[in-house]
Amino acid sequence: MAQQQAPRSERTEKPTPRRIEKAWEKGNVPRSQEVAQLVSLGVLLIWFVLGGSAMAANIAAYTRRALAFSGRAPDEANLLGRLADGGQAGVLAMAPLLVPLLGLAIAAQFVQTGFHVKKEPLKFDWNKLDPVRGLRNFVNATKLVAAAKAAVKLSLYAAVVTWVIVDSWPTLVTLARSSVWQIAVVADRVVVHVLRQTLILGLAITAIDVLFSRRQWYRGLYMTKKEVRDDLKESEGDPLIRSQRRRRHLQLAQRRMMAAVPEATVVVTNPTHVAVALRYDSRDAPVPVVVAKGRGAIAARIREIARQHGVPLVEDPPLARALEKLCDVGQVIPANLYRAVAEVIAWVAQRGRRRYRPAHDLPLEPEAGARTTR
Image (tube, one colour):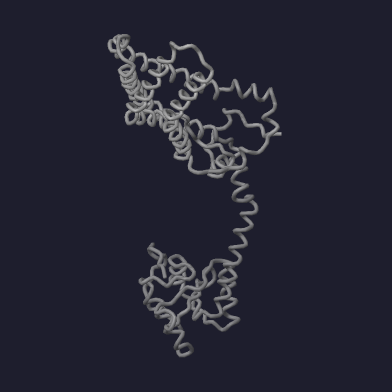
């Protein structure tokens, strides 16, 4: 059975990108029928302006032949010939118009939605054969709004056509004493006038309808809070799984960080709460790089690994806190710590000759500064 859609009053959340993508996959795309009708009006107007005279001549010639034949006794051969002649004249007159109309009407839909060939609308659905469901869809609010729009549009177009006919009435009255050619020419002018005015009206109607259709389509995709949660869960995964994934990533990052401690040049400590491992190799980088850092248990683990691999530990609380606060793992130290770190590196190079005593004047709480990038 088809999933029952929640009442509109409960669908208060804007659609997610996944919801919109699913709607397009099912063929539910915003489109306005007014665009195709506007294109058809434009083609009609252009065709009558460019080819109206030729069509009027063809109609006049055929009308003369038909009137000449009207006084003769009916003959089967002549009758069939006249009918074929009339059919040929009609095809020749309308074919150059119908083919562009059909092509441009199809193109107008692609302009609105792009080229989307979806299999979903072509699938057979037993629910479409349900008479109760069909009656419910027939009388729903969307169909009523569409009917009201059609009635208003028809009234506006009828008013425009009536205005054009009334405006042209003095000329139309004189056609009773005119030739067939004159009648065809005047009719062509009136039709062009009607099409021009309806095209202007159609532009306004189409602009309004496109905006209205897109708004209604977007509003129809609104979701309930539960649907949003389910959609996010489906697209991004369960929150518990995401939390476990983040925890695994953090563990992997910590393992990589701990694996770099044995290669460190020195570990600067707080001495118990903070530990920062630095590596300095002038062949790789002219400035020391932070390869590991941490607080609490992580700091204790860094110190433990450093002792196991003979990496010297230096107690310098202000420098340790400054490095931990201002540097990320993998970054070079900031310029304002060059002197303090240089003292540590120099002590490591001369280790055993003297006890480390910091000569820098770093504050107990380091000043806030921008983090450095490598």
